[in-house]
Amino acid sequence: MRTVREATDSDRDLLVRLFISEIEDDIDLAKNFASDLLRFRTILCLDEGNVIGTVSWDIRGGLDDGVIELIGLGVNPEYRRQGIAKKLVQTLIHDASVHYSSRNHKLRVIYLFMEKENEGGRAFYRSIGFKEMADVPDLYPHDDAAIWTLHL
Ligand SMILES: CC(C)(COP(=O)(O)OP(=O)(O)OC[C@H]1O[C@@H](n2cnc3c(N)ncnc32)[C@H](O)[C@@H]1OP(=O)(O)O)[C@@H](O)C(=O)NCCC(=O)NCCS
Image 1 (cartoon, rainbow, N blue to C red):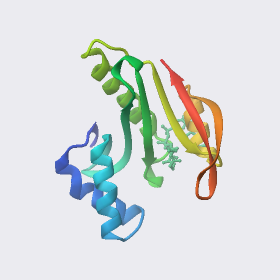
Image 2 (tube, protein in one colour; image 1 turned 30 degrees about the vertical axis):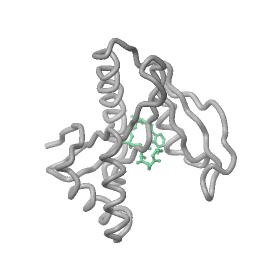
Image 3 (cartoon, helix red, strand yellow; image 1 turned 90 degrees about the vertical axis):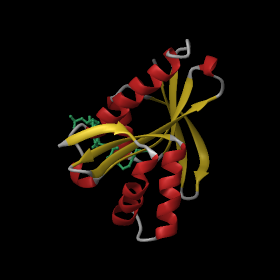
Image 4 (cartoon, rainbow, N blue to C red; image 1 turned 135 degrees about the horizontal axis):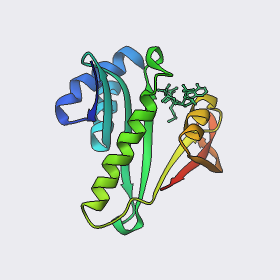
């Protein structure tokens, strides 16, 4: 069964295992990865208890700005094109909107930085209404970045 929910500290081992099996077999890097995701607000998609997708976000500026950054989004290659990333971002928008409205403010803008040469990412963000706004040369070691925004 698939579930989408916010990550908590009790997911730390799950995130370490995700990094080791999908990204790199290095326990120190895996622990850093898990700590980063838990430091931000992270939403997980699980299939039979395994993490198959994640997205993280964090508040930028004051609450009255209404701005958040979408920090990282990834779906296990075996599960792509099944609407999982779309569901993760929809959940992010819902959770962040509730975070703002429960404090009498409004979520207005989501932005993200993405590697410029990422055609899959570009097609995905375009399909859910984000707009490519500007380039940032050399932001990444091997690529320029593009800034994408969604004004709600
Ligand atoms: C980009 C990524 C997150 C998309 O995840 P996903 O779960 O496959 O996306 P969805 O199934 O929700 O896609 C929704 C729509 O986006 C578009 N889309 C998604 N991936 C696409 C691709 N590779 N090529 C073209 N269109 C794509 C399609 O319109 C798709 O709808 P459709 O399948 O009905 O045609 C995934 O490919 C991934 O993890 N890539 C590596 C990491 C990355 O690039 N992250 C984004 C930058 S941070």
